[in-house]
Structure formats: C-alpha cells, structure tokens
Length: 339
Ligand SMILES: [Zn+2]
Image 1 (cartoon, rainbow, N blue to C red):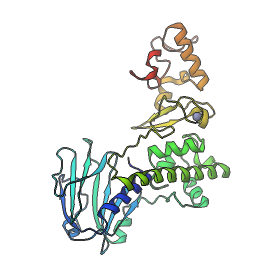
Image 2: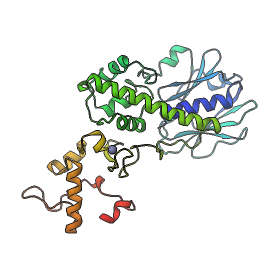
Image 3: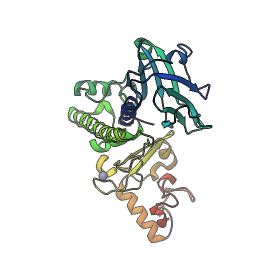
Image 4: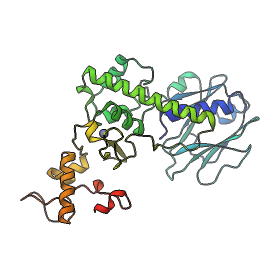
C-alpha cells in the first residue's frame, strides 16, 4: 500500500501536472468506487485544482469553495497519465479525470478485491471526518511521538502501522524504521524507555525523510507510475532470505494474518527468531530460538541428508514438521539447493 513517502510524491506530481487546471469531467467506470452520495462528482467539474493534501494514506485534491476529492489507493490502486479523453481501461479501470489543457488521469486497481475508493466531500469538517487521527510522524516532537506510541500497549509493528497512532506508515516503512532503530517488531511500546523512544523517533524521521526525498526527486522527473512497496534499496522489507545490508545475516520474517514483517535477527532481536502465534501453535517447543540453532539444524539436515533436525527423544511425532514450512526455502530461491 502506498505510504507517506509514495503519497507525498504522488501529491507533488499531481500538483505539477494538474495544478491550476480546471477539472473538466469525472468518469466513473465502477459504481462501487465512489463512497459518497453528496456532493455529486459533477459539482467539481469546472473547478481549478488549487493544491493537494495527504490524510493518512489518502490523497486529497483540493478545489475552491472547500471541495475535496479524496482518493484512497489501498493496496493496488494506482494512477497513470493518458491522452485527453482516453478510455478507462477495462477490468482494472476505476475512473478517469479529464482536465482542461492537461492529460487525463486514469485511476486503476489491479486486484479482484476492489478496495480503492473515492470520496467527494465539502467542508473541512467532513474532510476531517475521514482522518483516522494518527500523529503526523514527520516534524513531530519526541514528546508527542512518545505519547502517541505509549497511548496503548502494543507491539511496535502494530503501533507503527496503526493509523490512529501514527499517520501514513504501513507494512513497508515500519519494517524499514524498525531495522534502522535496531528494534524487534514484537517489542512492547509500554515497556520502552526514553532512550529507546528517542532512537525510534529518530529512525522514523530519518527513514521517512530519506524515502520521501528519493521519491520526490523521481516524481519531479516523471509522473510516478511504477509505485511499489518493494524497492531494491530497502534494507529488510520484502528481503526475506537476503542478506541484511548492515550485518549480512539473512533477513527473517513473521507472517501474521495477511501480512508479513521482515527483520534482521542479528540487528534487531539479539539473534532471537520471532515466532508468531500460528508458528508457535504448529511447532511448540520445536521452533528454533536463535539464528545459531536454525543454522545448526540446517547444517545437521545437510549432513544427514534429511530435512529438519534429528528429533530429540520424545520431542516430536514422526512426520511432524521440524522447521516451519514458511522458513523453508521457496522453490527457485537461491537456497532451494539445500532442500
Ligand atoms: Zn542485520
């Protein structure tokens, strides 16, 4: 899902291309994408784009008389520029926005689950109602940041990605922030001391600023059409099994619900492997507690020609998995030769 750095870059590009131009026509290809009844999108027609804003992970196009067009890209919503009055592409096309003397802006969603949305609202109060209310992390004071994170006792991964606590951070940048801060995704916010909170605050600022600067520079050159949550320059996000850029250890993951957190055990958890609830249930005492143990198991499985460790007496049933299936190399990955 596009997060704060991506949304900021989108907003800058949208202002660059459409700022000062009048919106000529709104074409909705899907009846479900529009989530508001009043004002009707046609009321925006003829109005000039005067700016953009970000609310959480939403893009806000600002028009005169407090009219706002609010777009939530969710996971796979994207924009592309097309020739004026170009047709909305079938299947992935949600809407098109035609402008006076500017390209047409096409809004797509490459997913069968249509979750991206458009709200048309009038008035600051109705706009504010769409704001989950999390603290804006960039430019926040350490005191406000600490208060937001300590407002509920949560794991750091959940707290950083909760839009009611912090604005604009999702799965990708939370992984990157935690790696920079060298903190476990499962660290509990209420147990963090002041030094740790300062380190996390600094890591959050640095990570978001660095990525925003990178995307802004790209968006100044060309309209961002290749927005992805997985970038080769990232340290751990989407890098499961690849070497950590700081220490070279293989990046680990925990899978929970539909999400995955990536982390470096050496840099972030003192070498401890994190087990999520489903893994713990599946493996019980079998879950390797440390990188060393995992490596020992792999070494013994290579030496013995069997997958998994030699079961200790009474520890496992025959046929039970010794290593969580997710931690096994995927077919085609560089590590698949080991299995
Ligand atoms: Zn590392």
